[in-house]
Image (tube, rainbow, N blue to C red; front, top):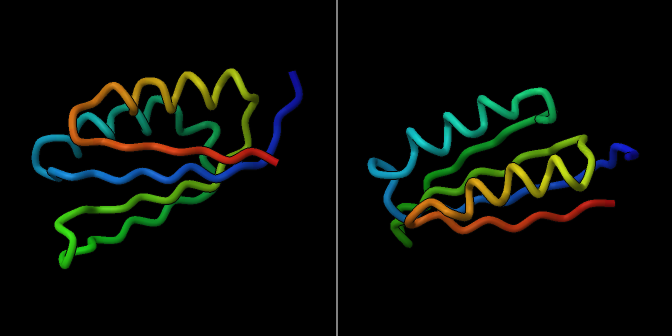
Length: 80
């Protein structure tokens, strides 16, 4: 399968509960991550992580599937 460029957006509602699991999953998939930016959005009570990736659609599905199963975590991806 061909690797494609993409963006993954992650919104975490409860940082103290979900962040360790999110970081573990991202670490397990670090080979596909080109860049990462995290921002606290205190007015909304959420934290946002944006990832720039280069991966196959199967690799992206594996990563987003694991993240999406975590309580309080929302994830969306876009591949080009």
